[in-house]
Amino acid sequence: MDTLIFFNKRQAGDLLATDDLSLDQELPSSIDYRWNQYGIGLDWDKLDSPVSPRRGSRFQGTFSLGNKRILQNTGLPEELYSGLEESSAQYQGWFSGEKHVFIKSSWGMWIRGVGGFLQNQNLFLNELYRLGGLKSIRGFNEKNFFAKNFGYLNLEQRLFFDQNSFLIVFADLGIVENPYNSPKIDRPFSFGTGINLDTDGGLFSFVLAIGKSSASISFSYSRIHFGYLARF
Image (cartoon, rainbow, N blue to C red):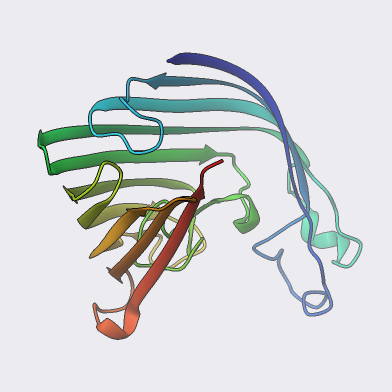
């Protein structure tokens, strides 16, 4: 199935408290803003199953452009906003491509590459992409990484023992740019194993992963991910 999408999206961010920020000499990493964007998307789907595919490819991508408006927070000194452009154009793009290869009746492979970018002269932490967890880079907490630009690759071997049930061995490799980190470029990677189990109510996922980012690889940094896809 091939789908072309046109969309309008409104994104907003607000500081919940400013008591600890009122004496700062510069703007905080997060800020109040409103971003109205208009975009186009494509979904090219040639998978043999929407739930547990064994063969086929899928490509998804979006691009959006809009005007971002920075709001002055009354809890912060007004002079901190001096020289900051209140309204400016901002754009972003995201894509995902995956391939399923069915080698034998009980052996398959899954490969996926995902990337994205966000561009504006004044970007703040609460606008950035969030990555990490079962659906992106395993071995890290959910939404662990903030990213202006990113790319990651999922490599997975699957050993099927039922139509929709299989054991997995995987590795995830990524590159993440966060202008608020030092260093700005991080290269997380992880590896691990898990199981996808087809039950009467849906699909259950259990993954044990070990990830490395700024910390060294160690079993003390391992993560267990659970997922459940209900079927009605």
